[in-house]
Length: 131
Image 1 (tube, helix red, strand yellow):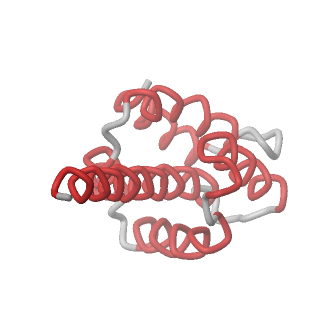
Image 2 (cartoon, rainbow, N blue to C red):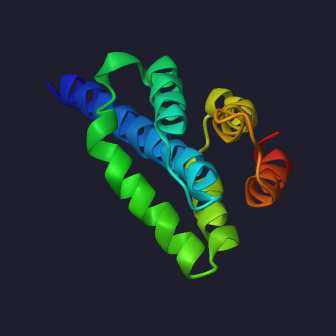
């Protein structure tokens, strides 16, 4: 019985960690999306598609999108983008996810066919941390 419980809780911990990491990745992508102070459908669709590639349909994208946007907006408005990226960096330990973040962030930044200077600055920071 104890082995079964241990296996069950181990699975819960892995699932919870994966959700936390994917939420952090979503926060990073929304930070890139909000860097130019505009949200457009093309960028949201790019973030949605990337999220589905990482987690499949079981990731509750719509449930996590608004909190991720709000967290990114607070970081930008309070001039705490570096600290926000520090938190994201500390949360994501998966090597696979970390290695995918820069190209995903670049895809979101270029989704509207234009990379603003603010997006470029965040992309440079993402490249240093995750590239």
